[in-house]
Length: 328
Image 1: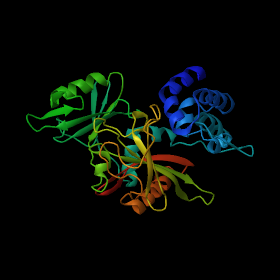
Image 2 (image 1 turned 90 degrees about the vertical axis):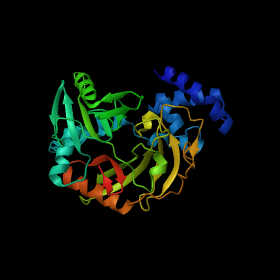
Image 3 (image 1 turned 180 degrees about the horizontal axis):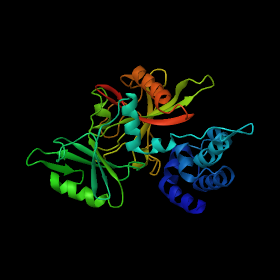
Image 4 (image 1 turned 30 degrees about the vertical axis):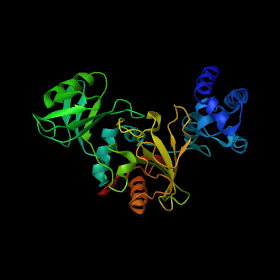
């Protein structure tokens, strides 16, 4: 596995890194294998975290992997000096978009409406009680999807209640319903409205909804605070999601000011482009751009953490900024 990943990513990135930093191909291979065997840091992260830089590589022992946190630290939290910690009851709800929607509604937290739920060929009406699909642009995604997989966008054409998918396919409302009934035999799908970015950031993501990945935690005073945030935007207008694993661009957000740092492309692709001061397709500035409604977004996330999931220590949120403000 280690050797295979090393071969794949040295092929994708080795020559570019050699030209940019002077680190030779053999050296890159050696460093990747060493970091993987000693610290469980695999080749994608070697390039993402720029570990060919010696100063950064010196801190690799401080990195925590996902498996170390979820399968390690979180499980150890079940015990506190020999006393069991109460079982967390909200974890499943965080992972389930429909459950999260209901919980947000109950607590008054602004969230995306879910029109219909398709499961095993059946329609469950939630926020849309009509027999036909709404006459506007739609966004369809799996109930339990990750990384933007399985999502699709359908633009309402108006004529004869027709919709056009991202692949150019045109379908009448009845055809789209039939398609989703069939698809839902194997996976549950949600039908939602297609939302538009706040007018101040529209040119950063074209027609694809950009989101901010925000981390919040319960601190030692039992209050909730935002610790980190990255702004995610689509690299191309042809994609329907902004996810990092779908080659989206991410930029660090200054927690205090809402100002963006440089952007970088998704994890499982070449790093040839390096860092972006400007968006590669729209050519608008990324670096030093300030996000609108930032103080409101901070309050929104902190309030949502305490209100919805007070038993959770750390939560990762996906928040969009619309003209009306932050939206989960």
